[in-house]
Amino acid sequence: MGPFITTTHLALRACLATALLIVAGCGAPRDKGAPVPAPQENGPALPSERASVPPPAYTPPPESEMPSDPVQRKLVGTVWRAKDLEARFLNARQIHVRGPQTEAYAPGGITAKYSYDAGKIELNILGKPVSCVWDGTALTINGMPAEALPQPPDSAKPSGQ
Image (tube, rainbow, N blue to C red; front, top):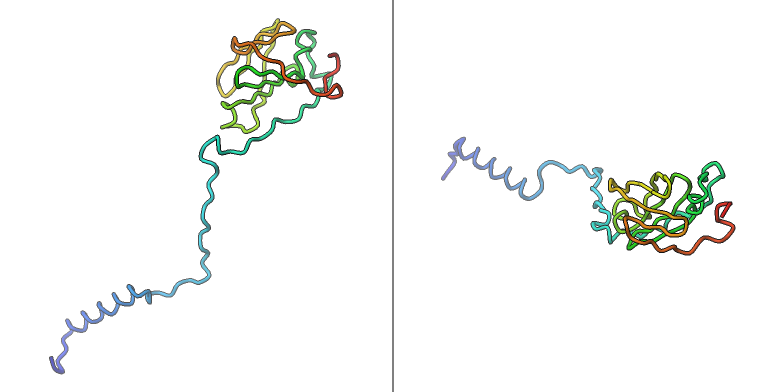
């Protein structure tokens, strides 16, 4: 080829040299202070993989939150189970409900408001209506008989029971 090098040869050699530098990693210097992104930790994918949370401890409500109806008053502080749903009547207007349907959204259960009228109890849990009937001794939840669960110690029961 001799001493004659054309501009085409020079341009070709420059392109090859640049390509080799890029492929070899000798291109632009790397910023050694740039943080390396940490691997992202995802929570449990399925509700069954989440840790079970115990329900909140029951504390008797003050007298101002107790119902005036003596039949409803017997219900406050009691815990009931119908199928896989567990319900604790906290005071005259609040109930704590837990079960497989709630665990996915609220581990440990959900506290909701309920209405009581002459033994009929109405509430909504996660947008689903729940109807209960209380006669002073027996409770049905959505038409299913509920089983009374063990009561808290006498010191934790609301007064008047």
